[in-house]
Image (cartoon, rainbow, N blue to C red):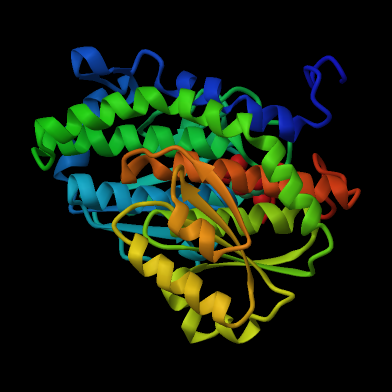
Amino acid sequence: EAIEKGGFEHFMLKEIFEQPRSIADSMRGRVRAEEEHLQLGGLRDYLGQLAASERVVIVGCGTSWHAGLVAEYIFEELARIPVEVEYASEFRYRNPIIKERDVVIAISQSGETADTLAAIELAKSKGATIFGVCNVVGSSIARTAHAGAYTHAGPEIGVASTKAFTAQVTVLTLMALSAAQQKGTISNTVFRQLLAELERIPALVEKVLRDAQKVKEIAYIFTYARNFIYLGRGLNFPVALEGALKLKEISYIHAEGYPAAEMKHGPIALIDEDMPVVVIATKDSSYEKVVSNIQEIKARKGRVIAVVTEGDSHIREMVDFVIEIPNVHEMLMPLISVIPLQLLSYYIAVMRGRNVDQPRNLAKSVTVE
Ligand code: G6P
């Protein structure tokens, strides 16, 4: 097992550090920015159908559901296709409205999650076309789907999903870009820019990982916190949910993810000097709004850990701790901003002496209802 961990203390840490490679693997043979080439082989015959679909419904559970929420923003923004993201477990118990021209994208690392499989069967019976985004080759979901794209992240052993998430987001971004190109809803300039930036992502993730020590120091300070709030807006909102989920799963600290603007409708009541708030505050279209959310937290003495774009001195002056990450196109930011949150949860859990790779009560793959 020590050999399998490749010198890392836990599988989870190894998998976090594998992300530059796993993200590159999920694009391998699919993207060549220089030639403006983008092709997902497994979708070739279905691309027209995706571009012509009136609606995309995404189903998944846990971290895969969060990847779906990221994809919702990207599909709607780039391909102008309305998207609904559903918990697979809820979807099948409420007689969902599915039409034949709907495309259902099922996201699952294992490809074996019982609720997701059942949601697919239901959608299939109503005539929808199913795309699978799975990591495990030949898994039940991959075989049941009409078409799909593997994430190629390699085996994920840690129960808390990390590299599978970034690979899912990468592949879903490629899908949205393909659909947008087919539909003509994206300009050549933006298409080219996004492909070029996608190719840079592995190197940028590498850069974030080089600062792991800084995250570890912050984790040390907050090891004994009893609650955490995670805030983000836009594409960083699902990242906030994912950061909170990671912390809950492996450290057993209660954590909530919220869209930053919703804070005033409830969570703000929780804020005092004992409440750490992780705010993803990168320089994007909602930056100014997030800055005012940070001011609201500081006015109530909350302790803010902000994930910011490198060189942001404005937020540094306002908050307790900053974690800097490199700048990238807003659409691709979740691939970068999630990395410090994975590290934060990992280090806190280790410092609390938790069984990081096999947290209590959780299973890697939930094959029963
Ligand atoms: C379990 C795992 C999670 C995972 C979820 C969905 O709850 O502990 O890490 O996100 O199942 O799994 P899937 O294999 O369908 O992505």
